[in-house]
Image (cartoon, rainbow, N blue to C red):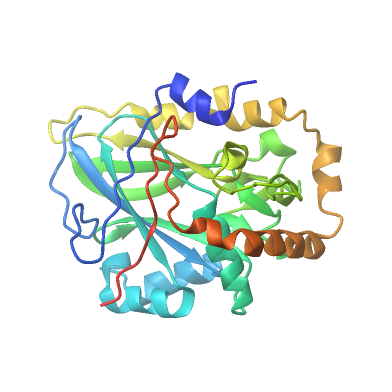
Length: 317
C-alpha cells in the first residue's frame, strides 16, 4: 500500500523547509517581497498557535495589526506570551506545486501543553509574508466545539498564493471539502473559516501501548499535516501562473480520498470513532506526555520527502 509520503514523492510534490533562527534569520518572511517571475524563490512564514480559536484570532489579527499583520512585533510578543506560538519559514519556488509538511511532534506536544495550561485543545496556523496573512486555519481540534465540528488532526490544507503582475496580494486557503471523510457532518470534518478539512482520528495517533514507539516513526506520518501550495494570478511579465489551478483540481485525484480508501474507512466507522471525545482526547494527552522526551533532537531530514528540519519558537522582541 502506498503511503501519502510515497505519493508525494511520486507526484513530485517536494518542498524544502528552511527554518529561521531568532538570532540570524536566513530567510525573512517579514521583508517586503520584490515582484516575482516564475521560478523565483519566495519565502513565507507559518505561525503555529496552540490553544487558540480561529475566528477570535482572525478578529484579533485584523484589529491589532491591520496593516502590518503577523510582522507586528508587539502582536508577535502577544502570541508568544499568551499561546507560546512558534514559527516555521519556508523557501518556495514560484509556480511550482509544493507540499509543506508539519510533522506530528510539532503539533501534538504544543497542543497538549496548551491544554495543560488551561487553553483550548486546538492548534491553528497562519500563513504570512510581510503585511499579508491568511486567515487562521486549524491543524488539530481535541474538543467538542460545535462551531469547529469534527475532532482529530487535519490531513491536508491547500494554500493559494495570489499575485497581480508579480506583486503578492493574498494568501488564501482553498476548500478541499470533507467529501472524502463523510461530508460536512462527519466527526472527522473540521470546519475552518470558509473551508472544510478532513482529519485523522485520535486513535490513529497514539502509541497504543506499543514498545519502542516514537512519534517520529513513519506510522505517524498520517498524523502530520500536508500544506499543498500553489500560485495564481500573473508574474512581473504578466505570464499566468499555472499551479493555482492544479491546487483547485486536487479533489479530482484527492490524496485525502486515497488515504481514506487505503484505510477502508466508511462513514459509520467515522462516527463510531468518537463516542466520547473527551475520554479519547484524555488518552491522547496521556500518550503524548509519555512521549514528550522524544521531541528533543527530532530530525526527519533522512525521510523521503518533503524534508522537515524543526519548527522553532517565535522570536520575542
